[in-house]
Image (cartoon, rainbow, N blue to C red; front, side):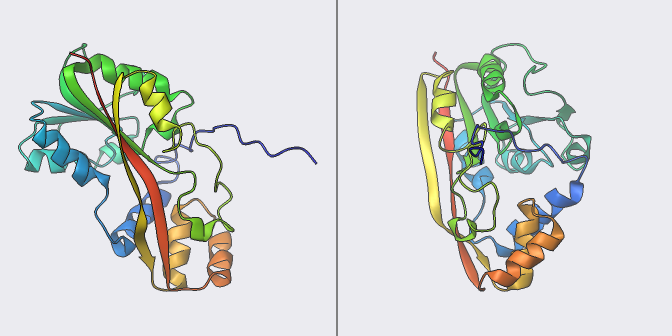
Length: 239
């Protein structure tokens, strides 16, 4: 029997080809999440850092952009998905994280939240983020752990398999570009699934096809509280 292939792999970029999958993920997070996501923490951190202009790489539908604007931090967003961008606020453009369309030293804060794992080589994008940061500016990225939701390890095919960017390898990847990094990890009971219907919905967001999600939801007892694991990595460009 051939050995399992555990080489880091990118997450599928399916926002335009399967937009319902993302909507399912968002719906599950809204209904069953027990805490705010990292966007609130990053927005607050940029505001406390008195960032004069922020850039959200992989902004999606603009959650971080709206939070920053509410805090009085001007912000621009970029995403590769037209489907996501159509619901983002006005200050956004379509583009590639590996070739940012801005001059160096443009932004006081740059974020790349839940997006670097879509890339074969996240270092390219992190290097670009550093380039457009002003000296002393702050970079923030985040990703879940490859060991996220251990309660579902028996039904998640990707459980424990490295991504090209997860909370286990993120410090090394960002540390290869930035000299100064800070890790803000999370590990706790942040999602509560009250019944089998909720579990099936959550699993569909985790890329199980509907029939597999239904089968798995019948094999796992509910209600179920999930342990969510991951980290925000902050870094600063040298002055």
